[in-house]
Image (cartoon, rainbow, N blue to C red):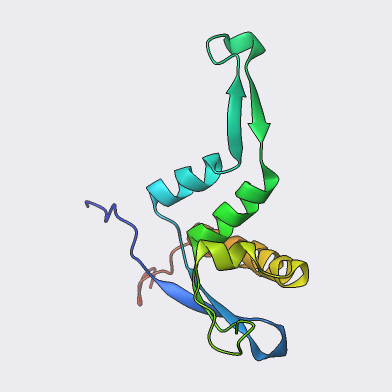
Length: 129
């Protein structure tokens, strides 16, 4: 039987401390996944020599790339007490504590989604009887 080969765009809301939340994609599609994998690479040394090739990593870019790939909305307020738009610039301006909380929430989310994908399919009703 042919399979559905495209990622359904679904989001879920993850509660955070102090009544806040982030809305995230349940799963990334292929392009988002590959973009995230390369988001922390800021340069390649010796690209023509496989044995001596090395990569320069930008951990800030990697972390923000993950936020940008997953987060679609949030409940945060700006300095003016108005809703803070969910943009890459505002993601970069988050407090360290908030960013760590989001990062931890994303870790849990990704693990839950991996487990859900790897769970055995339920047997049809009446199967095996």
